[in-house]
View 1 (cartoon, rainbow, N blue to C red):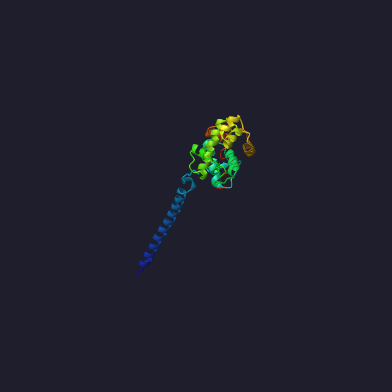
View 2 (view 1 turned 120 degrees about the horizontal axis):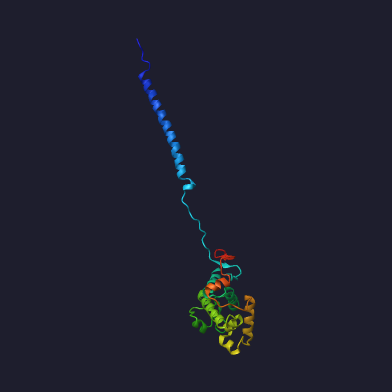
Length: 221
């Protein structure tokens, strides 16, 4: 009597095990290639290029005085930039006129930061003298007018601001008023210059160094 070399169930189990082993080998190899292929696709070489750009920050040059009020410093800077007037000069005038007090009123009726007289305010379109931005804008326009009228002579422009341009014309120079003469001397000493070139805003930016180099950022003020 002959016995079968292998029992059927045993043979079937071996075939099944062999197939599982082949499938496992195939799965491992496939996983290996897939993981490497995915890593290749997502490597930095194939990552999208992003151009990093540094945002431009508006700044005020470091040598321009500060009032202690960040918003006011920017008002003065931008008024000077628009009108082609050195912000340092505007600061010197405001410091003497009102000590940076937007609500200041003089005994003769001058009002606001740049102490605009009602007639002068009306002449330069100032409706609310106690609005800091409007007051500085009108006062800066008046300074630009005087600088142009007196060909950049700081003494005469200041005398005209204090006593009126008619008085400067009358005396052909700084009027012999003690108040006006002291006013001119103090502001000239603060500003440090006796001549202010009359320039377009673009040329003034270069002449007065209104650039982003050596500057305060708006966030630092």
